[in-house]
Length: 338
Image (tube, rainbow, N blue to C red; front, side, top):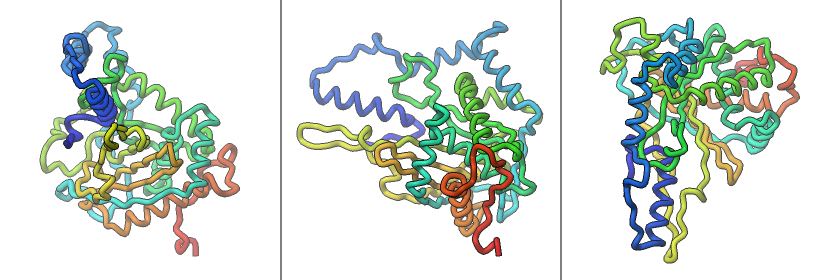
């Protein structure tokens, strides 16, 4: 059996596995659909929220937050990444990826850092990516918007539904190079908590709030990225045990494309950093997915090395993440220092 990502999201897989296990154990299990929330109930709820015109409605509160967060940010701004090809060339969405595994001591320090602020590994890794982009971009751009994804199951009734709920959101942060890593981490933590609070506003609605041109973002030959989202940060919590069902006659496991080591041939964004955190084995596997319309493979190989250099500086050297400013960090390759 195979499930397409456009049909269900990762959280739905967990529900599907549990339902399958229950059905296996209780062969005559009967379910009355009228007793349970269904995906259509979620769709109806979202439609009602979007069309609630009262001043203090849930959606209007979210609209106000997103207006303030993105105020003054050019909706079509292009971060000056180390592109090998012109941005205005025709885009085919062709892509590829490069994968690497983080040093186990780096992973340990990342988890310790998250625990020290009662935060999450996601927040620490996102902070690292903000700093990396600041160092990577021409003229060290400080006003940075990164796309990321939220589960968007904002009601308890939606937790165990099967369907596609994920919402794409722009995470905007002004990176002050005079601050320390720890200070920026606290800003990122605050940003993430606020975004989570208002994450139910659909991406399309956020765009409507800020759209100041008549450009069709779905135009097939559009040569620019989606508004606000040029680069994406994807964080995946992986636990193989959760993807396995123990049955009397054996074991049933969910197999994904990653299990086959398939090279990703499609890239919807210019550059995506994926970080897969295996909580059982305490490992983090990273992947830079990139548009082959814009980047050469050698450039991405260098990005992988630069990112690891940054992480090792932060977590495996005498660099003081509490006191030293991030301005002192470097992503130079060894031969570039000579």
